[in-house]
Structure formats: structure tokens, C-alpha cells
Amino acid sequence: MDLEQSATPLIISGPCSIESENQIMATARALAKIPEVKMLRGGIWKPRTRPDAFEGRGEEGLVWLREAKKETGLPTATEVATPEHVELALKYEVDALWIGARTVVNPFSVQQLADALKGVDVPVFIKNPVSPDLNLWLGAFERFQKAGVKQLAAIHRGFSYYKESPYRNFPMWEIPIELTQRLYVPLITDVSHICGNRELLLPTAQKALDLATDGLMIECHINPDEALTDARQQITPEELKQLLSNLTFRAKNSGSVEHDLANLRGEIDDIDAELLQLLARRMEVSAQIGEYKKRNNVTVVQMDRWKKILADHIATGNDLGLSPQLINEVFEAIHQASIERQSRIMESNSNQL
Image 1 (tube, rainbow, N blue to C red):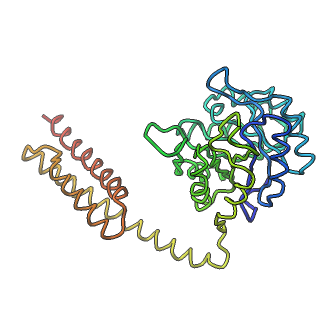
Image 2 (image 1 turned 90 degrees about the vertical axis):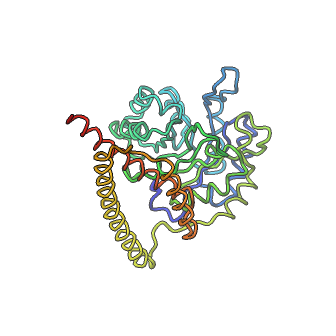
Image 3 (image 1 turned 60 degrees about the vertical axis):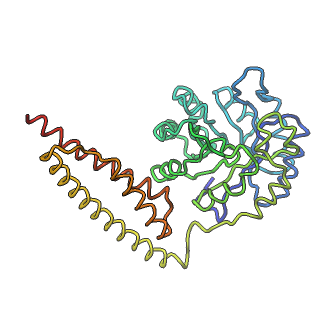
């Protein structure tokens, strides 16, 4: 499994849950007719919040998944959460395994799965944990690496978020990007679980592609409205075909335009260096202001002045084509750093007294 060498992203599709032989076979046959789809996914064991919810077909579903593979030629993938799951999935010739978000949060469970896969040459996809904890995600990779698992990839399925959002799981794109920068592993984006709603799939999939994802996981069901799990986020094979045709696939390696990109990136590097110099100078001036406030017994924060400054910056930024959110976040961070520096100056004066 060398996703990074692929000219186009790996498309993994199939139902959230394998519910019946007819359902998985009909879905697999339809997906096999879509050239972009390279792997068939299907949930065998479903970790549900409530005990009376549908928790998957278990071993019986693996029998059907193997039959779907034999008939269509599509490699298969499923989620495993216990060593017993691993044993059964391998017994029924599942080609790739993924570790779910709820499992990744538990290092003990991850270690048991890593131990169960020692010496097994099978691709393992590791989903991000439910919470936005990069170290927890990294730790899961490290456990499989120490167990000798060579074929590893990340699945970004979004994170639980305390604020109101149109997404089921908030993307927080910066976290999977940082993970791939640290580990250099292929990244697959599970847009179905990020969205939780089929209406958001197209723009979210395009966003993932624009950020150079190595693959997309999109849940597909022959009759999604009657699905036993996650009905709202699944689409029909025909809808999947239409969605893929509407996506713009961009080259990860720029080829002949790489030289131009290198020049532009060099310009950005120069600008960033100038920004750092200006930030350093600004902090020096802020420290001088702090010394003045200390000598004249002036409080560190004057909120009325700051609110006016921020409003002026947002207005100026808007004239320059910069979003208010960007201006607000950048200058709030700078302001907070200035407050902390001036506060330390005040505290040093108090300590001397």
C-alpha cells in the first residue's frame, strides 16, 4: 500500500455497517462499476453508545464481505477493536484494518491490537481519537511501529467539539496536517464522519483534496435511508459517482510548475522572516511601555483603547482583503503576549519591593 506514489487519491467506500448479504453484495457490485473506488469498507462490529442499538453482524458479516471481495475484486477493510476481531478479520481475508476513534483513546486497547498484529503484514489505518489530542494519536502510531507494523496510514474523521458547528465532528484540519508532518504517513479523510450529513460531503471532500489528502473514505449504502447506522451521512452508489465527478483532483507533485512554486514559497519565507523581526520589535516596544506604566503606576490593560485599536485593525484588514476572524485571532494573540510581558515587568517590580 503505497498511497504517496498514487497519482490519484485512494477512494474507500462502502456501508457504515454490513447489515445483510443482499445489502453488502448489491452495494459492492455498484461500487465496483465506479473506477475511482479502489477499496470496499464495511463495519462488522459497531461500538454503539446504547446497548440496545445495532452492534453489527459479527462473523456472519465477514463471510458476506469475503464473498463481495471474491465477486468484485475489490480489496476490503473493516474496523477492529479487540485481538479477537483481528483474528477473525484475518481469517476471512480482510485486506486492511482500521482502528476506530473510540479505541484510539485507550492506550491499553491500542497496545493489545498492536501485539495481536506483530508479524502480520497488513495495512493498518489509525483514526484520530475522539478528542483533539495529537499526542494520543501519535502514541497509537508509535505502539504499532514498535510492534513492527510497517503499513500505517492515518484516517482523519474529525473531533468532538464543544461549540455549535454544522459538522458532526469538527475537522480541525491543522491537527492531521501536523500529524503527517511529524510522521510522514499517508492521510485518508473520512468525510462521512466529519460531516454527519450527506449535504456537506462535496465541499468537505474538496477541502480535503485541496489540503493534499492521500485518500477519501465515503460511506455508501444501496438504500441509505433504511440504514441501521448513520443513515444521514451515507449516499447511494450513483450519488457517490456524481460526487466524485464534481471533485477537482489536484496534483500533489507539481512537476513543471515546481520551480515557480519554489520561488513563491521563497517569497513567503522572506515575508515570514520580516514578520518575525517586526514581532520582536513590537514586543520590545511593549516592554518599554510596561516600564513606563510601572514608573507611573498605570494599569497594564486599558480595554477601551484596545477595543478601538482592534476595531481599527479589522476595518483596515477588511480593506486589504483580510478576514475579520484572521485579524481578530492574530492581534488578540499579540495583545495577550504583550499583557503577559508587561505583567512580568510589574511583578518584578513588586518582588524588588
